[in-house]
Length: 637
Image 1: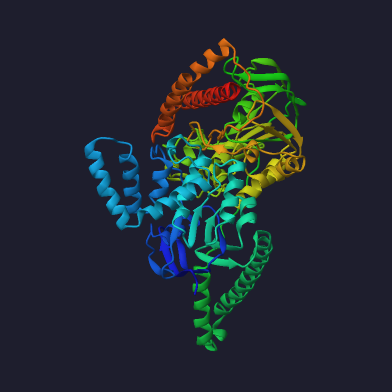
Image 2: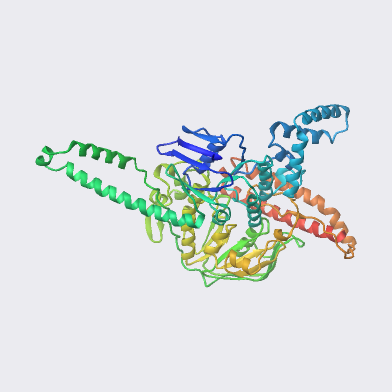
C-alpha cells in the first residue's frame, strides 16, 4: 500500500485552477522532487499534504500509523528559544514539559522544587525521559549546542536545528520546500548528507539542479493543474519532458487541423446543409468545447540585456589590495587580480567571508585600506540585490519599472512598459498588482526586468538564482554567457556557476582570495575545499536573517606544542574583546530588527541603502572581532 495518496485534488483561487483532479502516490523510501513553474502551486500542494490548506475537492490519505514532518521554507524571525526547546517541540506536550524541567532544574527555591517534582511525575507517566534521550541524541549527532538560542545562529545552523526537529519524531515522510535557499555550499552539502541517511520518503520542492540530481529518485511535475510523474532521475526527466512536449504540440496541431476542417464543412452551402450529418454536428460542438477548455502551456520569459557602450579593456586591477574596518580587522588581504572586459567572475565562500565587501571594492564603492585598486574607464554597472532592496513593495510592478515612463528603450527599440513586462511573464493585470503580494519568483523576475532595462556593460548579481524556476534560470544563464560585457556573480548554485563563469574567486574567511580558472567543478578538481569541510565545532556568532551567518566556532584541539605566552598588550586586548563583541552583537540585533520590519522597504531608498550598508559593515566588524578573539584565545591556551 502506498505511503501517501493524493486522489483527484482540486483547488482554485482565480480563473484557472491550481489543481485540477491531480493525483499522486508515493511509496516508502522514495525521494520525490516536485517541479513546476513559479506560480503553478507547488508550495500550496505541500501545504495541502501537511494539512495547512484544505482542497476544494479530492482526498489526501496517509498510511495508517504513518508520521509526517515538515521542514519549513522560511526561517524563524527573532526566535529566542534554545535549540533543545525547538527540537523538543516536535513532541507538543512532552516537549513543553521537558523544557519546563530543564528551566526549573536551574532554580534552587522551594517553589521551583515543588513544581519540578510535579513536572517530573508527568514526564514519567508520558515516558518523557525516552524522548529526552532522543532529543539529546539528535542534537549531538548534528553537533548542535542545545543551549544556543535560535536567533543567534546563521541560516545554515537554523536549518540544521529545524531538520533535527523534523526528524526526531522518526517520520515516515518528510516535506521540504526550497530547502537550499540562502544556504552556502557547505551547508547544502551537509543537508544532502543528512537527507541521504534518512530512510523515510521525501517530497521536496527545489530549483537547485545539483541538489535535485543528488537527491531525487523520481520527478513529479505540476503542470497546468495536473501532476505528471517521471520515474527517472533529473537528467532523464529532461529528455522525457522534451519528448512529451513535442508529442503534445503534434497532437494539438492535428486536433486544430481537424477542427478547422470541420468548421469549413459546417459553413458550406445549402446543398451540404440538406445532407448534414447531425452526429457530425454534435461531434463538432464537442471539439469546440474541448478546444475552449484546453489550457495552453505558459509562455517562456523572453529577455535580453540592454547593452551600454563598451567599457575599457581593463575593468579593474588590484595590487596587494586590502580592506578592513580597523587596522587589526582585515576582511580582504593581499588581493592581486585583473578583470578584463568580457570576463565572467564567480565568487564563492562560506557565508560571512566578505564576498559582498570584495564586490564593493571591485566596483569602487569602497576604498582599499592598503595596496591599490585601478578602475577601468566607461563603466556602467547594473546590480541585482538578493534582498530585493531595489523594489518598492508599496508600488506595483509597472511603477517599479517605469518610474513615470510609458515607453522604455531596449537596445535601440522603444517598447511599451506593459509589453516589456509581458516578456517577463507579467500579464497587464499582474503588472498592476502591488509587489508586496508577489511570490519570491515574481519579485526575482521583476528585479531582472528592472536590471535589464538599464544600459550596462558590467552586471553584478548577488544570489540571482533564489526563487527562479528552472526555465527562467536557464534563460538567464544563456543571456549572461552571450553578454559582451563583464559579469560578477555571487552564488551558491553550483551548476549555475559551472554554466556561466570563466573564473572563480574563492574567499576562505581569513582575508585571502584565491583565483581559479573555470567554475565550481573546476575549483573542486583543482583541490578547492571549504574550511567547514575540515572544521568540527559548535555554531557561534550572530547572523543576519537573510542567511548571511558566521562560521562555526572551532573546538580547541589538544596540542603537544608549548603554549605561546601573550605579551601584556595582547593580554589587555584579549580582556577587552568580549565587551566589544557584546556591543557589536547588540548593534547587529538592533539593525536586524529594523531591516526585517514589515514597513522597512517602504522608506526612502536612501535610508534603506544606508541601513543595509551599516548592517553589512557592523556584521563584518563583528566577524573580524570574533576571529581575533578566537586567535588570541588559542595562543593563550
